[in-house]
Length: 99
Image 1 (cartoon, rainbow, N blue to C red):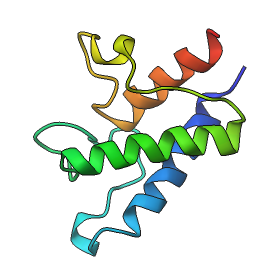
Image 2 (cartoon, rainbow, N blue to C red):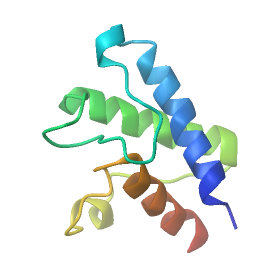
Image 3 (tube, one colour):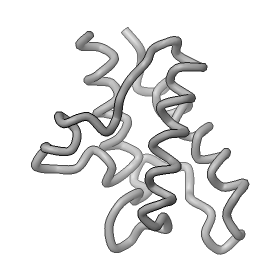
Image 4 (cartoon, rainbow, N blue to C red):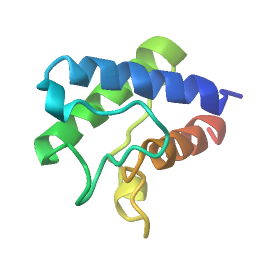
């Protein structure tokens, strides 16, 4: 079983990579309650797509598992898994630990 701490670390590493591309005033905080999607997000739609791809690659590289964060299951959920770092982490945990 992959821990939530390890998943958060993987997401934070992806955020570090994304933050390198952003001006200082738009850098994304590495906290569980950081908003990734919606009105209070610092990411535009292209930035969110970039983050999703980066997280998928980091999960593959760091955890040795392949996931698809944009499958029908993710996109049809009542509550988006992309709202915050925590919701994304929980969704990734459900994918990794239920395979």
